Image (cartoon, rainbow, N blue to C red; front, top):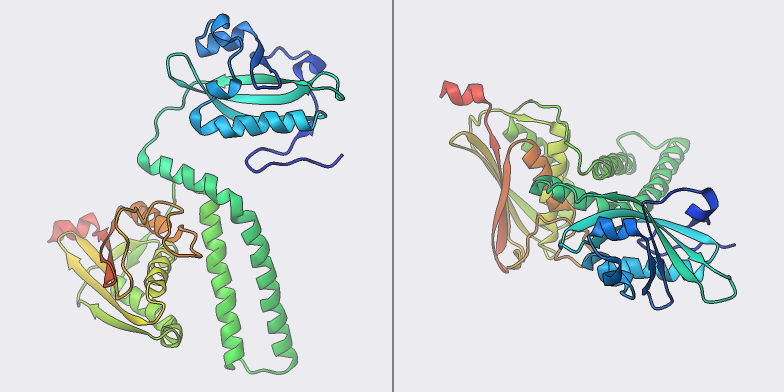
Length: 365
């Protein structure tokens, strides 16, 4: 039998039920061909605070949480279509008092496979509504859930590109290409960028968890200057002019250099992509009170009003993922810093990262 699968619904397992295994379920409902509740046990009613008479004949979809109703309907449709499968999933129901109840359910068909079958929804576990999380943690969790949809395919593409890079390296060696040859240099850059993407995927796979930093004192001015120098050829090719305004004697800050490089690359890439016909990027580093600030100003299209560019998967670009600026904010926040922006449509935008100085340095002042 071919395995059924619907986006957002786990692939079905071999059909099983509480009847087969003599499991005593927490809650059971039986749904008819029009999604109405044909049978409800006492436990299901009690957990949601309803009297059985209140639910008899009602639609299961209607008592699912509004955001879950389409998912609930698809589960029921797939179970009816594939009568030998069992679908395990998470659903949220709305209790009589309005509270949202999380539930782990198993959905199976019951009856003669040749006839219209009822659907048995076995609730294996009811869980109270999770405590409200902080904005920071909730944002990370939403990012993680969305990122899972394309991370697997992205890794596959990276594997193919990595294989091409290795083949180029082998062919260059076979032909005796010198180490300072542009082809060798470009291939090394390609492999480094693959490593950077690998780091990004690693971060995405751990979204929602605390970000552990390896902090060390860093001269931000020198750090940024090195990053600019490494990408100079790309700036010229894209008709991008880079101006620097870096103050002298900027105090060192505590950075996880690998992570902060990722934030820098995302911000700089955002500035470049805002100027498809070329333009000027101005980079500034300066001290301000108990902080060190990094600014990246572009002469691009600006940021449209009414959107939060830091919100994950929000993008104004035709082919953008909307992840870059969200990750910038998480990295900067982990450094106890703040990232903000100001923008004028069709004139440009300026993104500013403000990082706190170490307490010892602030006290010395």
